[in-house]
Image (cartoon, rainbow, N blue to C red; front, side):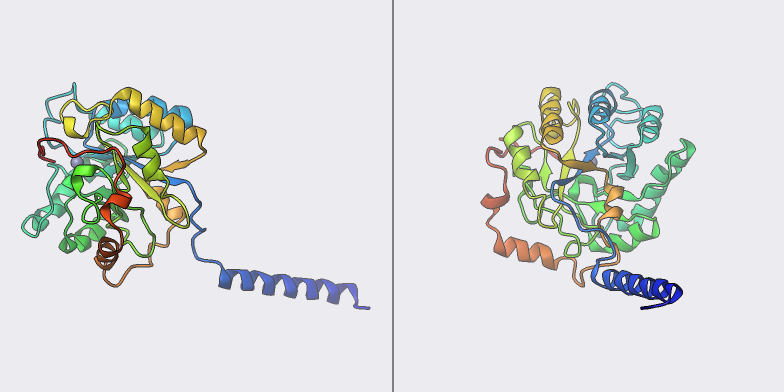
Length: 300
Ligand SMILES: [Zn+2]
């Protein structure tokens, strides 16, 4: 029979070793749950405030709004958000992400302009009481590896690309984000909403959100007057969100990935996973079923 003091010491030692054991076998971040969806909106569309905001608030969904002052943002307030509305989206709890001042397509030639383009949006955010963005969406879904250190320098932790190169742009499909295999600054789009989409396309995209993979959705305006080739009609958008809610999906902003993903775990070669997918997966298997290429390929 142990003396009570020694018995409690033995209990304490057992508890500490149990704790150390679990710490050694548990990953640093909690496991990625099934049905985890990252919801993103590009290009500062006025409909993000007027249409998306009330729907997302109704369901308690998180989302990231990627802000650019490109296109006719400075003068066309019928189609684009005001900074006052962007600040309100932030106060609602949504994430404001950086999409460059001019919607700058990133190529080897334009990388030297990226730091300033990011800084202008970050400064506007601070003027509005919005924290410096930590998420970025590659404008026109164009990415270049030379830009990665520039993004890191600007404090960007997560960046979203399109579904290319794995899936051709025209079909609006993509691949699931695989933390650890995909670089956190090259997170693929899983579904890129198009006017030709129906609920089935959305269902096909989010079906990838399982077994440690995350589905990343890309929307533009809901609706989008200035970018008709990526328009989502209001009724469709409301139908998609209602379905995600009814099916019990966890819908988060991009910055919330930090809760699930170990950002320190980086692939040695960020392009390897893309190559592996291209050679392993026939595009027909990942492209949404009813998406068709538009008759005329409009500029992105
Ligand atoms: Zn864009």
